[in-house]
Length: 428
Image (cartoon, rainbow, N blue to C red; front, top):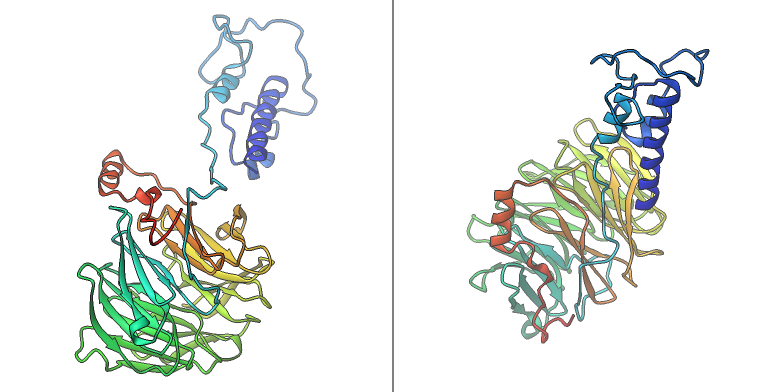
């Protein structure tokens, strides 16, 4: 794909050079390949002679870029020289090989669970069987946060608070535990659900939890006692699959009956909008950080579509059939792009441009559906997890940063995810 792109740009530059020399087009810069065909039109009349058989003796002037200066050693015109010297935009390179692959024993192949999250403080949390493990990208240290086997329970979801200090753990028995990650201390055990909690979403100090009991409970963790819910909503579906809160905003997206996509208010959880276009369970939900009210959602095996919604007007926007089950979605923090992970039948990871919905990259490697996705705090890397019991780290997004910022990031170790994990927990 990249070679094709490079060849296309080289061909456009060569075409522009020929048009300058033969037709006097006066092109100084090669534009976007998608629009260049329309721009590289000759500006001279069609009847102009194609070749000139005598050397011009006209003196070059600043406005006469098509003439060859008598003092120039170049065989091409001034504008063609500018064309050849014009800087080329660097080609976007996305490696199709993960820069890290780690074993994650007991990582479940269950579409309705959410077992991987990456905190704003650069700590990865992973639910493996009855345990939650934390891995610091700054120190490469792995710690076991909790083991629910003593309670006869198992982990069904994990979710970091926005500050990255607290991690919520949903369990098979329907509890939500709040843990202080740094202290390794359980702060509270929240009750209210009667079935496993597979979805968690933070909004400042409010935590929403979705369960197989078809209930969504919301609590303000600052309000004692923590076990008292601040709000509740019945999703009315077979189970609550997707749950996504818009940071610093009041909208919450969740799935309801018959694959409906619902939007509620954080304060009341009352549905204010609903969409019925999806034909399968909706797990993948992501709010755009670039456009207020823009939501992307992805459907399961019978749907396979990524749909975009303007939640401010209630209007559906675009839709693209990906050809396989959509498991997760995440927007880039730096560009109008998003990444999707997929299940049956290709188990691929796709990077898209929005709103053109052109595919930037296709990444493969997982042998099971890619059920888990989280983004690094710097917004450049993602980690994916699958039922093949592996975690794979990919560089998919990039941003332009100053030298100072890069130095601070290096000092903080934000890109230290290549370090080996302790072998008794995960094996490379």
